[in-house]
Structures are given as structure tokens and as C-alpha cells.
Image 1 (cartoon, one colour):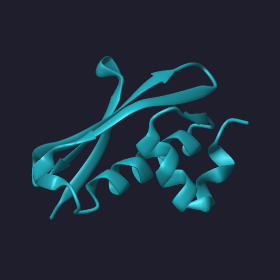
Image 2: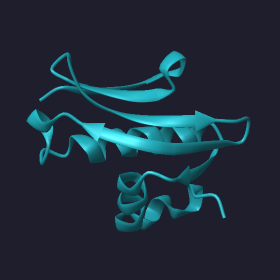
Image 3: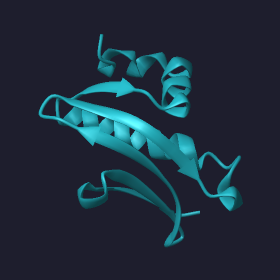
Image 4: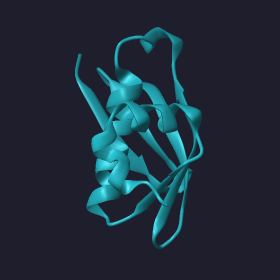
Length: 93
């Protein structure tokens, strides 16, 4: 299963593809210093395969590399961060 995550700023979302098929996305609102994740969706055909986690990990790594604080309004993103405390340092406080 070949996955790729990329930021699509024109649509304000990170998109994940699996074997060149769009499998999900994480929508966001971006400011100069913060990215707020508002909604995440994974296509049913890809649920339970780790696609959502791969998507969020890549999006958070990108936010970290850009020096952005993260505001996880999306329940999926918030829950993922809670299960991966190594990402707690990027969360806006």
C-alpha cells in the first residue's frame, strides 16, 4: 500500500492518497502562527487500515516543521494526539 500525503492550500486540506486513489483528507484553517484542524474524513474503503493516522502524523509533522501551533478542533485529530503524546508539544495552549 503506497501512501502519499500532501498539503493542498487552495482547498485548505491535507490529502492522503493510497495507490494513487484519494483516501481521505484533513481540513484546516491557517494563520501565520497556527493551524486549526476542523474536520478529518477517511473513505470507508480505507477505514481501519491506519490511513487516518498516517494522514494526521504527516500533517502534524508538517505543522511542526513550519513552526505552527496546532489547535485540534476535529475530534479525530484531538484523539490521535492524546494517543501520541510525542505530539503534545505542537498543541496550542
